[in-house]
Image (cartoon, rainbow, N blue to C red; front, side, top):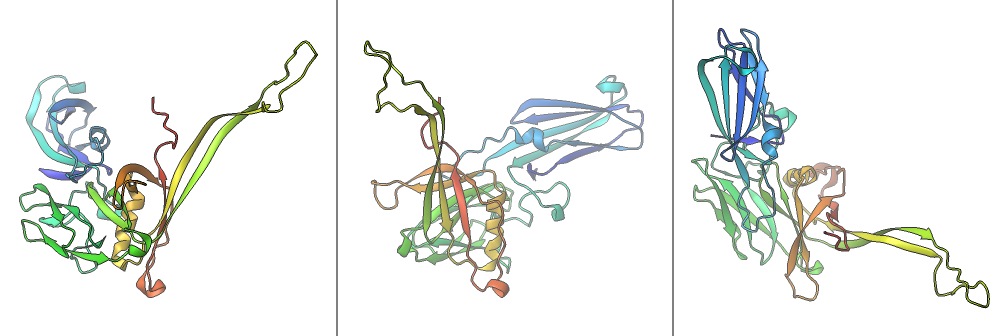
Length: 330
């Protein structure tokens, strides 16, 4: 069973059998037949079906507090028929392909049909360092979870405690944890996003946060004249210029603090993610209390820094809450 990246095309192919005039492709997702695709064919050719967008529609991505990977099972069956439009008799044995789909992607340079984890398992499902090892950054006294894939292609997670400086998977893969003191600006701000591998990953911003509220509304001019017995008049406390449909969006601008150059990959994957959450501090509840809310990365471009050109590598990213400030969910 292959682990396929569904944000990139995934082509399923079959050679056209002698005597075949059409090929039928059935796509079963989560145990339910969802699609039947038919192509009329020519002899001595290979037929391809791209199933990525079809299967991706059935991945329900939501924030998971246990960081368990969210995937979908896919079974693709390709069958040659000796009649047009999938009619007639079956020619030769069907080709059956079983996959596990992720909300993941490959880059252009990585070629066709990208598969997870882009390297040999067992491994963590996060970017490597410049020496092909694993290092994450977290504030002092914080715990977390890192998704990983096992030798036997199983999906798992590896938790770390508030005092760990490294963790090891059941397959003996080590991830170092670099602890950062960020008490000058509180306890840090955590962003969780679906990374290139299709799993949740944390990225901490250790320096200051700037919040902004942007308001929008509409207006119209009303007639405030009244006609009592003494003639036309109006109330000076009754505004003729009315306001309605007032709404607002809240944004959070976060400063990362200093990261090594290999962390550029994490910031790249954050910008390319379509699922991002902010662990928003809850005022008046206590230090360390937060609510996880969906956000959009409002920053659209980043000039990646290097140790040679910039010496110190730090990024400032703006996030916009992915909902209106005034509750209007009906």
